[in-house]
Length: 313
Ligand SMILES: Nc1nc2c(ncn2[C@@H]2O[C@H](COP(=O)(O)OP(=O)(O)OP(=O)(O)O)[C@@H](O)[C@H]2O)c(=O)[nH]1
Ligand SMILES: [Mg+2]
Ligand SMILES: [Zn+2]
Image (tube, rainbow, N blue to C red; front, top):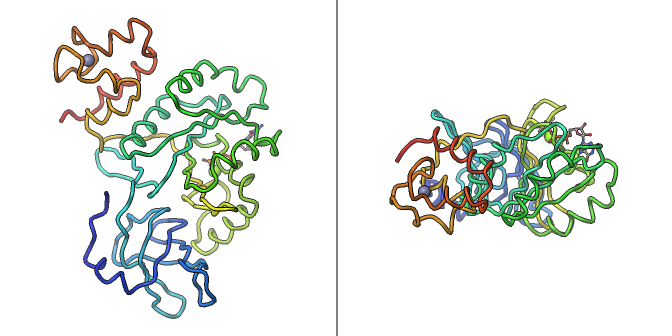
């Protein structure tokens, strides 16, 4: 669990609750609990008390109406999980209380496998299930070039969906709806991979809803600049997020890094040295598996690079 209950938490029982749909700086867009005529179930903007800015999409919060259209978030409920990235200086929370993370990739422009690996490790740490969505199947050569890599991730047990959101919208909806319905899924990935295109396909009023919030929170309009959750018809939520170019894992220990490599897990503890880093030690069960073709070489190399940059604990 993250987010230790703060002082305000004790008061929260008496307050109304809501789910954070969008976060932009210190401004938030809430879906209010309840389904009554007094505003329950509606949406409104809110701010946090003081300088607290670590409230994210997916958070459950207690809020108070201050009158004259103002609302304040008094406390954040304990989280089931919190997907984060970090560098040496600061940690950035992306979204909370997720059922799944869908990493959107494509061969056009070519995705970075290093970033993919980083996201998978961060999600594993939080116990968030991952799937891969490979977009732009309609663009000649886009998926062919990455097919061998997609196979590697499929063999690791990650579900991989190949879609052409633009050319085959109906098929895309039919493939993804059952997968996403009833659950909260965060879409994430590099810029231009097709996250918002998917959201616009699966959530019919997404563009309009985004515009409403952009105006309320005074954000930019053209690219995705803030993380935003959309209700799916029939239950569940889809969260769109801005594309990223870095995904730091400074908040993870070396142990968490190696556990994030799914195929390493059954071999951990089988190396000659208990503190093996799986880079150069003799008698390393992981390196033996790489040499014998049971672990993908590229994945191991990416792990080595991450490990080289990781803080030793
Ligand atoms: N041909 C084709 N183009 C697509 C597909 N999906 C997305 N695109 C195009 O790819 C471009 C980027 O799509 P977006 O959905 O805005 O990408 P994004 O991942 O939301 O990007 P950011 O918001 O910057 O992170 C747009 O020009 C889309 O029209 C697809 O399946 N096929
Ligand atoms: Mg976008
Ligand atoms: Zn080892």
